[in-house]
Length: 281
Image: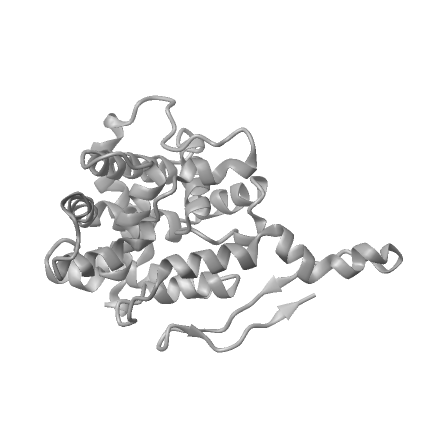
């Protein structure tokens, strides 16, 4: 499947499938509105964790979910082809990717410029494609796909656009092979998801991003994601990073210097893990 994948035709097919959805998007209305203060992206994203959808799907298979939760998971699974095209445009389109990377920096998320599926990063990505939708056809198509996924998911109950799309995108990325076997995804959509899965691993800028990419490998057993995200938040907030990297230099200003740290994980696509982490100064 990987050998037959062609990037530009895949992007064009995703673009074409999004065309009927464009007329449903309200003019000049963003799927995700940027907050006035960059500290408020949590509130924009919403409290529920869409990345827990995969674990809930497997619980659904064992009959352990309530009726309302099952409706959300079924709706997210039904959105698989839409979510696959949204991921294709977000990750594989250089036009969309470059704009979102810049927006992450501009909105004080520079430590996670390549991040996508975590709540605050995804909220920023959707805000960006909305803002760019009038000047970029790929952003416009992605924005329309996001609106459609959200609309379908909200029929099951209250959920923010970020968490609705997060659940659908997480499920299709982890279960791409299964959804393809069920004929929910086309051959080219499956090939795109395999590449997206690998690229998210290659672009991981910290151990948490690497773990997120690792989690979406369908061969890997699911774990306690709530504990993982709690640990990530505790260890990767700006204040924590400053304490680790710069606290001593703030105490001794005479020795302070500016530096740029670039994380370069060596991604092993066979094991789904980074072999080592290196840093350049």
